[in-house]
Each structure stands twice: as structure tokens, then as C-alpha cells.
Length: 133
Image (cartoon, rainbow, N blue to C red):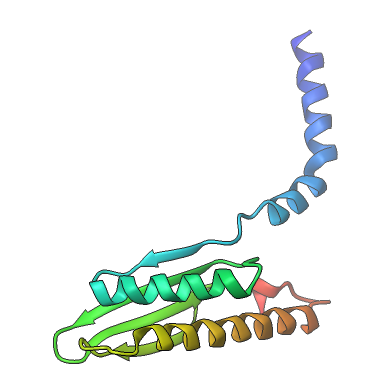
């Protein structure tokens, strides 16, 4: 009886492997903007940036907003998409137009994400998969 159950389980697993591989790619959670900022300026930038993106796009992608504070230059803020830096800028400590900068950054990042998605769709992967290129 145990042998029959084990055989049945193996057949189910073997039959479901292609579908399971496709389901893993489709089951990825999307729509996250991860806040990895430290200072008050970084948190404010993240708030305005995320607010603008949520208002203007579907968010079918994930982003990470990182900050590296520096006493002399301010804070280096970067926005990453699939481990690629799409936006990098030093924000001085006395930022007066932080909201406008965050809105411009959100619009720029949105356009870059669209461009990267189009490049992936048009990329020829007949011989190699995308991660092998």
C-alpha cells in the first residue's frame, strides 16, 4: 500500500513539474517599494516617491529605495529594480524641494522600468535564457 502511494506521488510530481515551474514565475509577489532609508530626509524622499508611483502606475514590479547618509554631502539615495540602479542622487541635508525631486525621480524610474520591460520582451532568447546572457 505504501508503495502504491509513493508511486502515485511520484507520478503526480513528474506530471506537475512543467506547470510548477510556470506557477513559480507567475506567483512572484509584485507591487512592493521597500524602504531601506535611514535618516529623516531619506524617509521623506521615500514617502513622496512611493506616493507618486502608487498614484501614477499599476506597480507590477518591485523597487528598493536605499540611502547612504554622509555628513559632508548629504544622503546618497538610490532606487533599484532587479538589482540594477535606476536612480542615484545626493540629497543635501537642507533640501527645500524634496517633494519635487522625489516626484521627478518617480517619473524617471517609472519610465526606466517600462523601458527595461520592453527590452526584455524584445530580447532574443532562443539559445540562452535571460539569466545566462
